[in-house]
Length: 231
Image 1 (cartoon, one colour):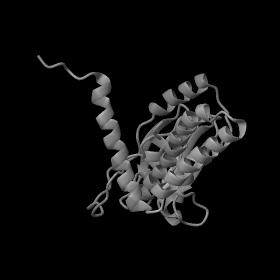
Image 2: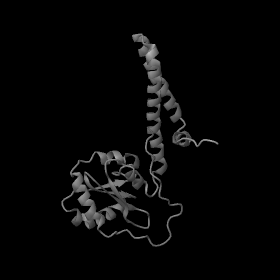
Image 3: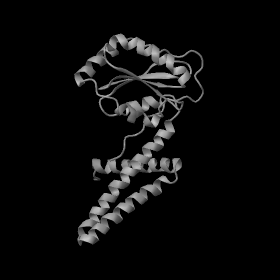
Image 4: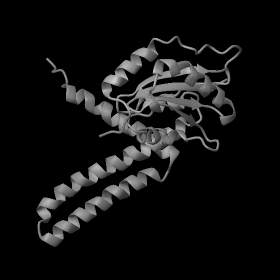
C-alpha cells in the first residue's frame, strides 16, 4: 500500500515551480537580472570564504558562506522580481489598488470609491496616518474626482487628516512603484483604536462609485497585485 506524500513533499514542488515561473518573467523583463542575482550570491560566498582563510577557520566558513550566498541571492532575486512586477502592472487600471492591497501596516483599502468612464478612479486607504485618497489617471482629470471624494468623506472623517496622492507619470504625480514607499513616510497620527473607529464611520457611507455608461475601453483589466517577496 503506497504511502501518501507528506505536506512538505506536496509543498516543495509548488514552491520550486513558483520560483521558476518568477525567474522566467524576470528574464523576459530584464535579461541582466538573473546574472546580477548569481553575481551577488557568488560574491557573497567568495567574501565569506576569504574571511575564513584569513582567520584560519575555513571548515566553518564554507557552510556559512553557502547559507549567506543563498540568503543574499534570494533577497536580490525578490527585489528584482518585485520591480519587474511593478513594470508589468504600471499603467493598467487598478495598478495602485493592487499595490495598496499588498501593503503591510494594518491598512484598510476600499477600491474605486470614485471613478469615471475613462477608468480614472480614486481608492481609499485608512491607516495610522489617517485617510489617504489615491487616484489613478491623468492629472488634468483626477483633480475633480479627488476633490469631490474628499468633500464627501470630510464630515465622517471629522478632524482626521485626509491626504490625496496622485499616481501616474504626469508632473507632480507618483510612479506606481514608489507609492508604497511614499505612504510609509506619512506621519502616524492615529492609534489603532482610532483607526478602527474611523473605518466604521467611513464604511457606513454610501458608495459614490457608479458603473460608467457606454462601452469600457478594450482590453481594460484590473491587474493582480505584486506577489510578496519570497523568504
